[in-house]
Image (cartoon, rainbow, N blue to C red; front, side, top):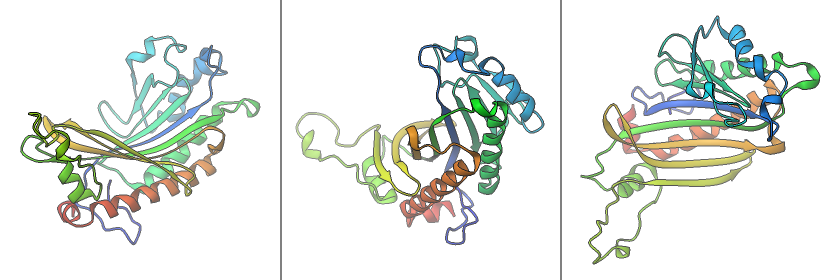
Length: 261
């Protein structure tokens, strides 16, 4: 997460943001995804339309695999330059927009999402527009953490306001350490604005050869309620981003807020 220009949120000079991901899926023929109109030309056409902004094309290993084996798996990546961010990824039935902390601006990110959706839809004839069936916004944050010297459950409870601490009596007299050395925990909530699901996920990760506590904040919608045009998707993303920011700043209030300022 990173500070934004919303008045009520402080700007963070040292935010824990790792990556922000917009992800959009559309319906494919479950038996023959390669039969989707425009499938064979989609990646090339998208690259031609995006190359002024993302001129570096990076084919991914999945590009060598038939589409019916890897539906909704990204196959091509378009970057500003080699190993540069942000980037766009596309595959059969999926497109993503990925930003990292460096150079991330919330308003630019939102404008890029709307432009990307409009570009994708412009490739299809009016009577063959894709039917979007999954939409999500994901923020990934991380902080250094020594899992051997510290209790991760107690740390999350104290600094992020989330109680994951198991009772020590569960492993009493068993020879098992009461302090977890790793974790993978997810909370899922329904939400009304925007309509969909809100998820918090905590886990152990590695960054720059160091152990980190990694947490993801995700808003997602699936099925028939997924918005279908650029303006509707943009409005949904605006609400999802506001929800994520609101929860994030409530979580870090106190010790972590001072650390990230």
